[in-house]
Image (cartoon, rainbow, N blue to C red):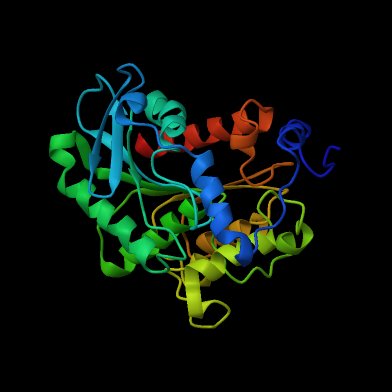
Amino acid sequence: MREAYMDREVAAAVAARGGVPAPLTAERLREWQRADAAARPRPGLRELADGGRFEVGLGEGVVWARPAGASGRLPVLHYLHGGGLIGGNAYAVLPRVLRELAEPLGVAVVSVEYPLAPDAPYPQPLHACRDALRWTLANAAPLGLDPARVVLAGKSAGGGLAAALALLLRDEGGPVTIGQLLLSPMLDDRGGTASARQLAGRDTWDAASNATAWRAALGARYGTPDVPPYAAPARATSLAGLPPAYLEVGSAETFRDEVVAYAGALWQCGGSAELHVWPGACHGFDTLAPGAAVSRAAVAARQGWLRRLLE
């Protein structure tokens, strides 16, 4: 049966996959991680090259790619994958990022293989993302990358890490990046928003699943006032001095209200933010239903923002 609060095409795609999944519990975490790893196979470098469309290679904790034949130093998406901080990998997301962003915009992508909770709780994933950025900048010249045009980017947990990395770089004094592309970012460990309550058991990643992931990522800090903004960016007291941000989220998504609040906090600090709340979209809507009108509109909006930023 179609979920009436979702976009019609998105709801049909969710139904075709068996409906909204059961919430993730701590007892099922290891089982979920095994299933997630099986569902996201890692393409090899030859497969990522896609018959010569892309140049690809490996670095320290990263897999990088750029459109083949592109001349000059290319802008860079420093891309952080999703998976709730407990799943996903740098390789599985890359073909789509290359197809939808790198190739049409003429940018390179450095996809980061950060370690996963609970085996690697905060701050290990964030520090891995920072170290990967340092590697990218140190190797920019031989890879044909422009170190002055780096955009932090990520989806879901990766979006939260990108926002956290922007805060960390600001407070450490660099390196400087020119933007942050935050797609359904996982920003707030507290789970107290109206959308988290409204969509409990109804979103593809609901409040219970989110709480399980945050517990794994934060360990003993979970539920305490001691969670730093570099772990959960929504806890930041000031968002001043950050690079321009693109934020998107679905109206039928657990993260809706925390993303909207984060955009508001950026504006209140005098920052630049472009916010899209896609009607009827659940978490991961564009992956579940890539051909849906709302998914195509979302991809076009991301491309448009990046094109304007890079120009």
